[in-house]
Image (cartoon, rainbow, N blue to C red):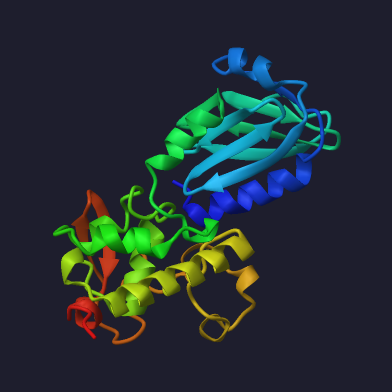
Length: 266
């Protein structure tokens, strides 16, 4: 599932591509056909990202709500677009460019009130200017492990499994630590580090947690696992001990017990 940096990156790109244009919206697959007719031909304003959700705003308080989920994927084309590849749920065609969307969890036309209802269920989005105090107030009273809380979209919106592993490794934080045992200073450091990581991901359109010095090459050229420090690694880059995985919140979390086993305290 794309993490928050990716949805914000998509929102920026699609706003640049289509803002101010009347768009043709169709559903080659057919499942979105009725909703597509509600916005096709209307002028597109912008695309907003909140956590893992995308909202394509059109004139008349209509918007397309997209949640990519595990399998959602966009393809970008020129105009006219080629024949659809696979089951294209939604096709958007502008003046010079077009996009196809395959396999999203959610793709529907909603109004402003429905959008507000979706957002109300989410925690603060670091990239969207969310208030860290809202997240802190939920974490500091919870007995759940911080490794579970950080994935809860109602606590912080936009964090996925890669950011989770890389965040705790950089902080040297034990992901098993209950939220109510984390001190405010440690949480402040967590929020700053997460925001830094997400901003880097937004800049490059992909998660990169190693530094330019660590990589030895320009960050933009990094692909695959070379972009990460701990996620899916065999050996800790700090102490050379074996990296282990534990299951927290039904997801596998990679960590170094030697570097992260001590609870984070001031």
